[in-house]
Length: 159
Figure 1 (cartoon, rainbow, N blue to C red):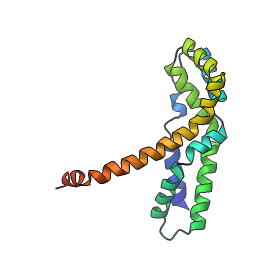
Figure 2: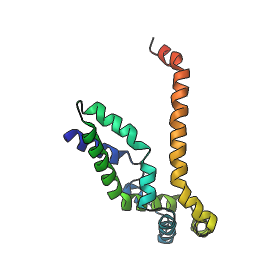
Figure 3: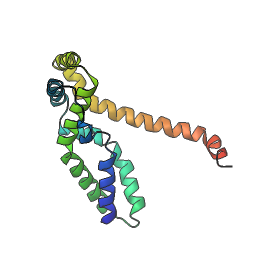
Figure 4: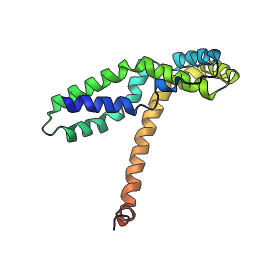
């Protein structure tokens, strides 16, 4: 059980967005606009869809870290991981808004918000998690093939 806790903590530490990003937001209005963008373009269900591609790899990691773990235990561990990750959604949403506010001007944020209020913007917001998931799978597959094709080069680095 301790290994599971350590792994979950490691996952949370891995998240690229953190509330530490809260430093130096340009203006409160930028943050307000960015929060509107995030609220209009994502939700917990979309976040859950985006998390799905990482679960098989995480499951493998748990299986390797906990020798003798049963399928039922691994299933339960993945449920716990998903619960923990979903509990972080409000923090992720706020950190995302801060990241937007720090990278876009007030005028740009207003334009983004206007775009996301269009039919096309809403479609993009709905499709984005599936696109990200698909691209993650494609990227993983292409990366595996590239490593296989270049295994001799990689092994030569250790000679």
